[in-house]
Image (cartoon, rainbow, N blue to C red; front, side, top):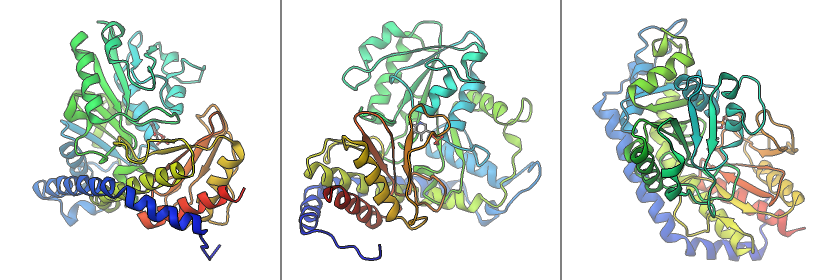
Length: 415
Ligand SMILES: *Cc1c(COP(=O)(O)O)cnc(C)c1O
C-alpha cells in the first residue's frame, strides 16, 4: 500500500470538487481564525504558564493546572464553571455524569432531538432495559420525535411541562441522516423550552460541535453542555477525557457524581496529561477546520459519484460528521477498510463489524489513530443497518483526509 495510484476519473473529480468548495473552505478558515483568537486571548487573560503543565499525583489537592484548565474551558464556552478531566473515560461518561449528578428519582428527562445517540440510550434505559440506567433510579423519560429530520420547535410548548426537569438537545447527527443543529437552532430550542418552563434545564450533547461555529451552546441559552476530549476540543493531542461546562450549581452536582459527595472538583491527579490538554485546546480550532475540510471534500467526491451525502457538499455545517449512504454492507466494509489501510497506525489491520458495548447493532469502525478511537483523527464508522450510511469524521490534516477519502472512493469504484 505504499503507492497511491489514483484513477484519472478521481484525479479529475478531485480537481473539480476543490474548485467547487473553495468558498466553503474559506468560510471554515475564517471560523478557525476567530476561534483561534478566542482561545489565545483566554490563555493570555488567564495567564496560562509553564507551571500549569506540571503533573500531580495522589489526591492532587490544589493542582493549579487542573484548576486553570477548568477556568479556561469556562471562559471559552462563556460558562460560569467547567469540569475538564481525564478521569472521564469518554464523552458518554461526561454526559452520563451530568445526568446522574443532576437528576433525582421521579424527575422527568426529555430528549428534544428524537432518539439520542446509541450510548445515551443505554444510559437512559427506556428504549431497552440496561443495568444501572437512569430508569432504574426512577428517572422518567420521553422524547420528541423529529419531523423531516428537524426539531419540532412548535411542538415544544406542548411537550415540555412544568414538571420537566431537564431537556436534552443533541447537536450532532449521531448515527442518523438528520442534519446537525446549528447554534442558531440550539438558541431557538432553548428559548422555546424556557418560555414554557424557565426552570427546565437545557442540556446540550456538544460532541463533534466544538469550534465548528464561532459560538457555543451556553452563549445561545443552554444551561449546561458536555463532550469528549478525543473529539474536536482535544485537538488530537488530548490522550483521553471529557468536559462539562455550564451553570455553577449544575457543574457542582456533576462533580459530586464524578468523584464523591463532598469531594467534587477538588481532587483528581493529572498524571502527566496537562500540557497535552492545554496544547490540544490551543490547536483545536485549526484541527477542527482540517476535519471540516475533509468532510466537505468527502461530500463533494461521493456526491460526484452519485451517492446521497448528508450534509451536501456546500451546506452550512453544525458538526464535523460526513454521512454517505453507501446502500450495501459490502461497500460499507470496503470504505472502512480503505480508511484503515491509509491510516498512520494499524494500517495493516482489517476492521470487522462487532458488538460494541453500548450499541444495539453491530458496528464497524476504522480508526488507525494515535489515540485509540479518537474520532478527531481520520476515522469512519457505521452501524450495520439501513441505509448503510458510513459516518466519516476527523483528519488531523486535510492532506491525510483527502488521501483516505480518495482511496475509499477508488475501492468502491473498483467493485
Ligand atoms: C461521540 C458521541 C458521544 C459520546 O461518545 P463517546 O464515544 O463515549 O465519547 C455522545 N453523543 C454524540 C452525538 C456523539 O457523537
